[in-house]
Image (cartoon, rainbow, N blue to C red):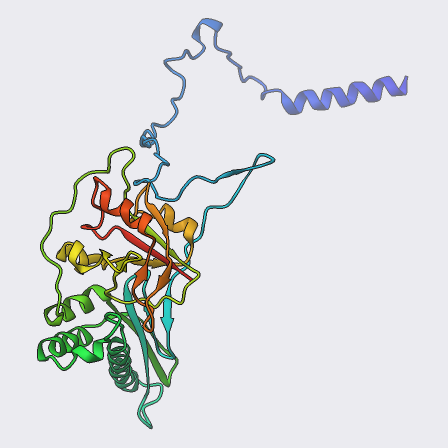
Length: 328
């Protein structure tokens, strides 16, 4: 009985708390007056996201690298890697693959000017002078042909002036300052070296018309000389001759503008890479060098059969200097 009374008391208290005040009427809207869709709050208008165009993931240009070759077992071999032909000294190097001469120069800030803006400026100026000196020394040592270097041509006022001009306008690649020493690196394209020495050459390339388009099916697109087994020395000018000493390739066969722009050849060290490089395109004649002509080891001898293939081709790739030499 006591439990029932207590329950009724609790119920009465809850009723008084949640019920409206005495005398206050509670109105519920009729069902037909409930808010419709037109009265419902609208979501805020956000601007539509911009349309993103589809992305073309294909490269802008087709690369010359060949697809991975298949090997037994369903695996693929890695693409051949290019390694460059470089003659290096302490402060400079000649890159025969990328066709440039590069050097570095260093200078310290004057005493008492360390870690100052003026000291940095003076050190940079001295580093550029040191760079130019190292570049000049290296360019003088560039081998022109089997008998001469650039030093032999510097006696010509024309060549000397051209070389001095390219040294003064050297392209600075990078510079660094550690607070006391400034270091710079700069390079000169071998194209400029060829242009400088051209007026003094005893034999000059003429103006020729390079073949247009691609070679026909079955025609050679270029020449790839494999001289990895020989002590070949790179040079600006060289000759390729047959076993009888008759010239197959050299200045007499090329267009002067092509010679200045890209040289008689590019030098590589990886035969697999060179076969598919753009310079010799897709179907080069691959000729194994018989020997180099001593003592300079600049000019190359190939077999009479390979020489005959070059001479009989309907597409004369020699005019455009589409030749690559692979050396060790």
